[in-house]
Length: 167
Image 1: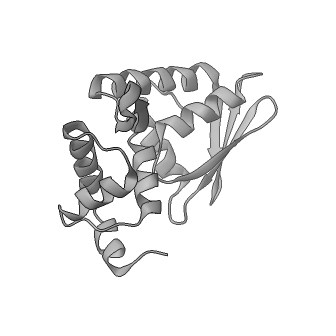
Image 2: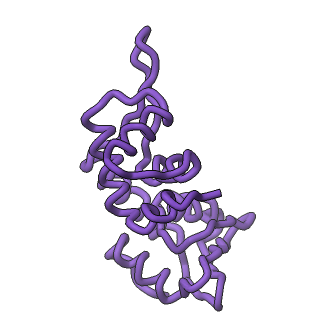
């Protein structure tokens, strides 16, 4: 359950993510507890669950440092851009058409491409998406957050994958 402090800082997620990124790039952070303390020193108060979600969004992971243990690391901006391009290519290579209703987007794919298209969407990380389900062969269902439309989804997808053409 979110605290009042958590609610107060959750509204500015982009700034919080920038702060977390800066901390991880400038410090050797070995645990989420340590990161929470560093965030509090910046007047950012969030729960461990929120921090876990933020770390996932930033693609942060623990990396080994030999006998010195593990610490959190984030990919460079160039690496993130390259990964985004790869995910965009995977999506374009597999999708056939996109349609939606009030809360679900249906993406038809070429045979055998539903899993790679769903994985690409998951990795692209569109904020209005609750989750994806890849069908057995040629369809992906995308559940949307309340108040987020299929048109919003399509626009965000085009912003992430400029070469996307509607079908």
